Length: 363
Image 1 (cartoon, rainbow, N blue to C red):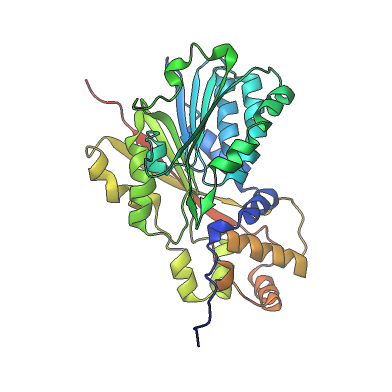
Image 2: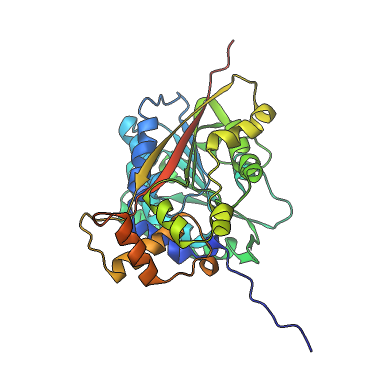
């Protein structure tokens, strides 16, 4: 008699619909963007333009906010962007935002890819996979026309961003520019074998699963992004940490083993320290961190079964708890929630934002 087949637990990252719901039901994106822009307030745009890498663009909200900020600061500055995203559905969600950007700032080259963070930092070719590259020159001058042009990319994205057993099948790269500026921006169009001249802004907002080891996070994300910075460039990294109201609720509802496995609470500065000597001289970089909170969207809350269900759902999402480990009684959650707070709360989740800056090279 054959052994029974046991279904493999779904990884947290597989639930793309949960991510879209999280974006809609919480104010994490606008609050994160607010703190990112605070770090960019004194940004000096180099004479040859600004170069940005985002290793987890999601639906493009944070990237669009940064691009709008740069456009307001210097509307004629050339912009080069590498946006890494594992999921094709997120890439499609980003396209309307890129249409709005090119309408205001056509002097841009934007590269979308599914490469790893390490390969995205150099746009290195993954020879183990077939290359799926598409270059498009936009012609429109308003968001509606540009959106129509970008919508023609859906078939390519669906094909190039295929997955098999959780891994990308192809080495995808989509290069978007505008015909009006294509010639003068030729030096920014990626070419095989040509090294990228570093980045001024590297964004890593929730790019890893919290349960991944500190060594993996440091080597797969922090090290390659810090190494790719130009002088005065900043790596801005954001992650959820185990403090705050939501964490207290999770502590009461989940087992200690689940909490320890999914919320190791390793500061980004510690991750950077693990790889610092491999990528730089001792005093070449400086790192600072701070924390901020976000919660459910809206202002008025009333404790109810629906409300607590939403709190639980977003708390479990924020801490990336696999669904098969998050089984709990809703009535138990309501009792605990009511006992913790004197009045309804927005489920405050705490994020850590760290900035790693590369100091100018002397001489």
